[in-house]
Image 1 (cartoon, rainbow, N blue to C red):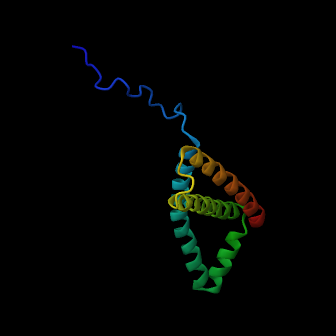
Image 2: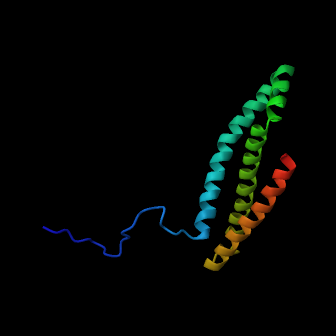
Length: 129
């Protein structure tokens, strides 16, 4: 007995590597990823703050650790996530006010978020290094 699909309009290919997502989807996914990175990063930074405030030796240890290139890369990554999350969050607030809610407005807003974030992240990299 042959089974007949209930809805013949259903997608056949569910390989996520071949599905083309719109730019707005990528900005939304990046916004969520940056939020998760910030959540984890705040815990690490709070530990470093606690260690630095515990004693002079702890402060010296944190200061020495932050001088390494790997630590600078981590700090730059966390600050980059913060910048992107902030810019994308402002976009969401602007859309909540009714600006850019159309399909074209959403695409344009995503482009603006990516460009502003990229410029600020590069400037932030120059500042950190």
